[in-house]
Image (spheres, rainbow, N blue to C red):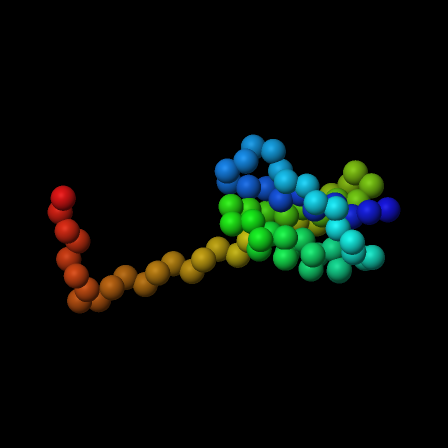
Length: 77
């Protein structure tokens, strides 16, 4: 049976679905991670086979920027 990847997005209410060419779950995880990277608004990828969710991958959060020391003062508009 075919693995499928469902990408959840912050801009779409319905997940994007892609069939995967993977032969096993490890390959499916790699494919799903790559697909998630291609979707700028995607935040999670779910791998499904035979109508059963096998695993989910979440996008790593970007590190918070360190506060500027002695940086410019915020401008008031």
